[in-house]
Length: 156
Image (cartoon, rainbow, N blue to C red; front, side, top):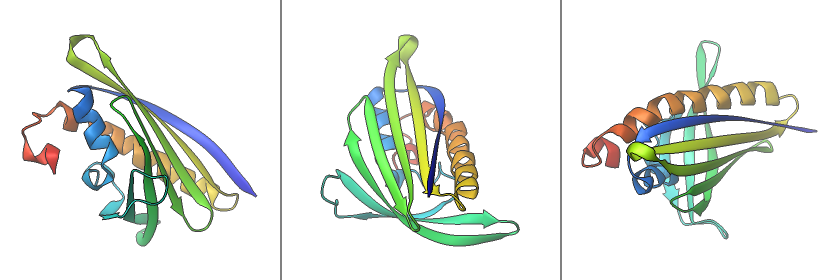
C-alpha cells in the first residue's frame, strides 16, 4: 500500500525568471543546494523527458549515512514552470512542481510543491528526509539566485 503527501515552500529572489528557471531545471547544478546530493550524472533523456539524471545521495540513519541512487526526469521546463519526477526503489516517487513568477522590484517568486509517494512502512522516513532536504535547499536558493549571474558559483 502506497502513502502520499505533499509539502510546499516559497522563495523570493532578486534575479531574472530565466536565471531562476535555468538553475532549477538543470539538476546537475543543484549539488550545492540540496544537502543530500553527492553526485549528479546527466543521462540521455528518457521518452517523454526533456532531461534525465542519475542522482546519488547519502541518507542519514542515526549516526550513519548510507548511499542511495535514483533516476530523475525533467518533464516540463518553461520560464514559468518546471516539473521533475524522481523514482527510487522500492516504489518511491517524488514529484516537484515549481512555478516561477516575476514580481515588482525585480523579484522572482518561486513556489514549489513536492509530492512524495512511498510504501507505507517506508513513508514516514522518506517524507521526513524529503521535507528536511528540500526546506534546506529552499533556505539556500534565495541567496544563490540573488548573486550576480556572472559569478561562476551560480553557473556551475
